[in-house]
Image (tube, rainbow, N blue to C red):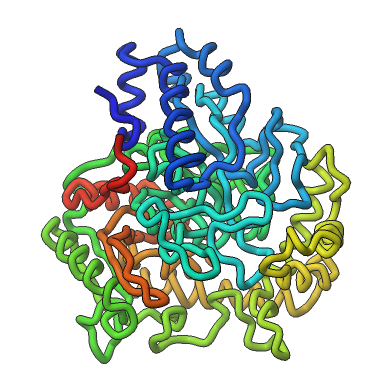
Length: 524
């Protein structure tokens, strides 16, 4: 019997192909779980809005089996609410200012999902504007959607109503819904860590692709140099299957024209893929066995990392512990270059928002274009309009302020400023030339291993891919409250267009470790 709360998408596809279940039955089953766990019970709040046409669409697919042409026929999928759907569902990015805003058309990724036969079940909640509205905004919070909760500790909240165990951001709803068994798979987005962080926190697999592998057309933007969409699934094979659908050239996104991909991301998945692979572990040269400095800074993560490395070595990988030039992102020895979009030349004069120079300049430029070209049924056409709306509705819209939007709105919006160009060049130098490229070339690596999303910025700044897979569980004490065990992922990062290689490595680890465990209180 198919158990929706934990069934891999590949098993669901097999059940559909074997006529053991229908698209309508699947959709009804997930809707029932959404009612029981997202709207009631622990009230996870992972879904902002359900597609009113979902059952109708599913009914039309009941006689269609998954095939090479329509590999996702009948599969219910959620998309993050910054991904445009040209239907009855608004595309809001979690903002009250965009409540009711509809898109002129489907985003390219949504078109590809529909063409593959997927049922768009609804829109997932997110951190507002993909966590670029305010520095102090907790992951999973938006003024329109409220707070997403972790399925591993949904009732554990601090005195301010913020989850003690964070759901991860900004694709929090997309991740929580998959972890809780509210859909077969979901689509999230990342600029730096927004796929990897929630996947890690919810025990999922995700692919943060090379920028240009998946079209961004119709996605509410932050940074055209770093934005990308990606799948969230329960298994590596499921992620590879979705990559087959989503990775396509698109004339609406020029970055996709240089795309390189295999014919089938699932073809080379193998248990022995780790044998002979050289995996880099950024380590303290003064203490090389102290993997990624975690023993000094994050002891919980150190245990997961140590156990994960043992699995890799048992599988035949060659683990290379070596200092990474840009290791300053984690507080250890390393460069002070702008790995995290922090421009040391900006002289931010006490304004922490000015640490995110590249994002702020590109946000105004890119968001204004989206609001002009894609958003309908709204008077909001510029970032200045969003700022003004929020100020006029501060009681509802500005619980955590809008310091990042204010800083972005103060830029020219045309990317002509010297500060922006300098910061972008420094980011590339630190993350790419002196970071991933130098590290991987020097040590002849196939991938670099990180715990959780701690290495997200390095690959993201370079536009390079990462694949996250469940690595283990951690717990701790926050604000005097003990947490239950919750997931921590491990990330394989690599060079541009190396998703197929990273998926192979992640698959071998997954099959040897079996670290994913669904939330214990959400099993039927």
